[in-house]
Amino acid sequence: MIKRKNFYSFMMFLAAVLLWMVNAEAAEAKETRAVWVSFYEYEGAGLKNKPESTFRQNADKMFRNIRDNGCNTVYFHVRAFDDAIWKSDNFDFSTYMGDAEPDYDPLAILVETAHKYKLSFHAWMNPYRITQKKIYNPAEESTNSRILLAVREVIDGYPVDGIHFDDYFYPSRGHKQYSKYSSLSQKKKKGYVNQMVQSVYNTVKQKSPNLLFGISPAGNVDNCEAIGADVKTWLSVPGYVDYIVPQIYWSNAYMLGGKFTKLFDQRLKQWRGLNTAKVPMYIGLGLYRGGMRDSSDIGWKRSSKVVASEISKTRKYADVSGYSLYSYESLYKKSCRNEVKNMLARISTVKISGGKSLKKGQSLRLKASVWPLRLGQSVTWRSSSKRIATVSKSGLVKAKKRGTVKIYAKKGSRKASIRIQVK
Image 1: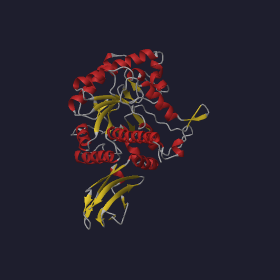
Image 2: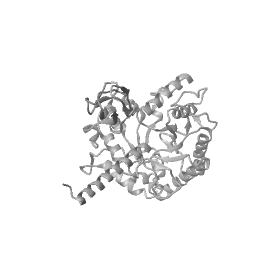
Image 3: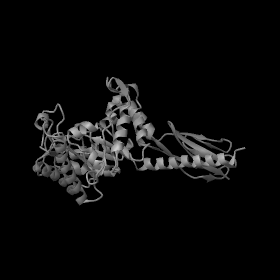
Image 4: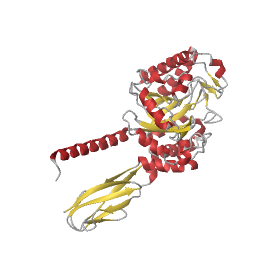
């Protein structure tokens, strides 16, 4: 016989578990699940040098694929090198999108199509980069003016959901222009970049308080500060960003200082610790590294569940609101196939809809829905008691005798159930 004190303790524990499950499900439902589409991927996605009809068809396929892989947000490269993929009087048309400006507006079609699939579209820009080897000087007012010009053209001309910057600020070591700025202190670099970031934030908010501005800095905080990305300020003082996506592209089997280090866990903890202003944080995940042979980071070769595991870890924390995958082509790249398969299985859900009662001798059809859609909609059905009711491979339930039965639908490791009363 269970003692009253133990019984109450058990019930409190059970209530806590149920509350955690409800909160976890709610967190997953509202989490940002993003993917980057870079300028390198225009041609592979069938967007370069295409007539409008073909461009529309291929854009539709791309965004449908993104939705079917469970994503709800796209960071799409619209300005990689002081250029534009929209019709502009101030910026040259991107040569990565076409050898000449087309007679249609690519960005208008892209935003429209993304929204068709209920995807949030953020216009991804590189603020300073002119070419791979040259940047605009962040200290010059004309640089900020040019960045703001591009931002205004996009937010005034297109119904985008946000503006997105990545991790390119001052040149890092090895860049052709590194020596030009190497004598500048970190404090000054961060000061100039912060002026730009604040001006972009204010411009975005003046357009609409619902329009978002976010940055995806490099995952190494020291490297961020060295190139002027003042992530500590952005995460502690309001008025800089609406969200941040640190690119934590490592596994937990990284060789550091002669020993293997759980680098993903370490960096995730560090970024969470910096976020004293509770800025919405999504974690950038290196899906492109799936199956990669890397002597420094062997986790990607050892396991095909790195991204799946990292998504589970992001979901453990209330101060992490989602993730972003780099990048779109990795969703279909052969070397990433197993990573993607395990990732989809990890985030998957199964739901059952249909009637919950029927009379003896009657039948009813249940329907199972599987998410993400790329997993397909086929499920395995099972009845908890075939004496009360059976269920066919297509979800047809036949009542045999009075009683209560559970019908299960299973997809991989995920399953759902519905209770049916036979009267």
